[in-house]
Image (cartoon, rainbow over the protein chains, first blue to last red):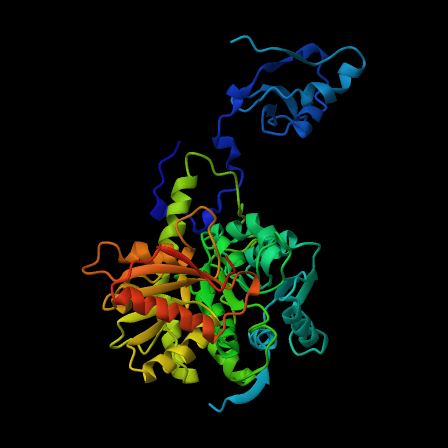
Length: 102
Length: 395
């Protein structure tokens, strides 16, 4: 919880810094967790496109962008990435949902 | 400035004032007795007298939602409603105030349903008295017109930026032709002026993207409500300045309350809306008989003018509050609640009693107000009376 006092708030409670969702760590809601199976991954970026938050990490340093894993501070375990993972449809899932035992 | 002396209904007068304000957007949904106001305004649009984008929506909830969206772009926006229509807007009415959007809205006061009734009382607006809007109340067609000009200056003032509700009694004011003075279009425009689109924020400002109305939980909701409290509490100085400017321009005096023959009054009636006009006639009759009685008419109910009311009522022996709405199971009507609370703790406060009257448009005639004054005189003479009373009902 941040501590901005009433007098410093924007009129009407608007938010002026776009993309500030990344400041909010919401990964502790999770009951299932995605596991990345690197050898099955084709780096198609479907998981990155479908992720409702910003939980898929990418490496964009090379010409071909690569998926490199998950940001668990933002992943809520919804499993949409696993549902849409194209290799999974061929029986070689690159994302597998497992129970988050913590 | 030469004003125009015309005959208009309250609805026609308000539509005329809004035409003179040149709003950008007007979402519209019909409900009696407001409908005719929007009909008249739609005529002005169709005849090319004003360039306003009218949005014909499917409900009042949508009307206020469209008004909020349009206003958040920086546009000048109004809509209008009555009764159950206002009740259906409820959720979004609060949002408009929270987002500090300067929307103006006539609420042409009508009873709330159960049973269905189209006639005047104040239960619609009084139900929304805590929604964060500024409430102006009108005694007659002239005041409705003038309020519909002043509301823009109040709502859009950089030190206010809150929505304004203009209350005038359904049918009694909305559908009754009265003579009044209106400003020529160019003088009205000179007074209102274009909306300062630089004030506040705009959804269409793509250089400065914003989120409007986000999730607001335990960490910030309380602070945002506090900023709303401060906004409406800071509004009186700006409202007062706008009243003063318009009074000088029009020659018609406006203030938070109007005092009628209260200088030496031992008994004071407090009322809102058209009833104040009837009360003035009856007060004149009793003054001729030597009864020291006066009236305080509340023009601005939110923000509630505590200090001026304390001053106006402090000298009286007995105050009779007239409430044209009811709080079931509560301690009197909303006007009484506020007045009693404001006077508590002042030195030698008057005896204050409440009369619920006129529900569902029950006509409040001279005989009823005579009966009220007779009861107030008895209390001044030492008689005991109930805190909460009824006027004009068959028990």
